[in-house]
Image (cartoon, rainbow over all chains, first blue to last red; front, side):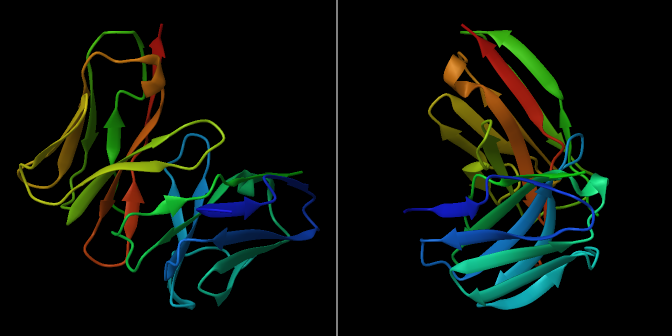
Length: 113
Length: 110
């Protein structure tokens, strides 16, 4: 595996479910990011992790809970989501800072019923 | 939030035509990037510009950063079907924040 991988690629969940999105990077990078891409809205940066430490949380609701156990893996735990949370969730990584070249995964298409 | 407005939002042209996409903001950015995103994939970085007035060329693509570092343009010469995709500009505020533009969806018809 090379680059940035995300699983699952598609996810349908009810509002009371708990699920997790997984991201793995095979590039030896030290920074990882979660983004949300909704229809008709710009791509939004949600969370930033540097060397496993969260450095940014852009006012994301607590029903989204990130976890970064090591610099290669990033999770996004989801619980009691709303239909408006339906979107494409993208993971990215970069060498050190957010202005370094970011490599994106293919995303997880999430639908909340 | 620093808003990056892209225009046009949608563009459909014939193969061989030229086009320009604009990315405008009222805010100053320390650097600005352009990405292309194809269906079912994440964005892929095309270029980074950091100096006001900077022009970079990538084959048939020409990128320009405005003198005041508030705007940028992407010009494609002799567009090809392989150029089809969503073009996104993105700016860094000098800290740890990164803002994407509203996007331009380009379709090049063979």
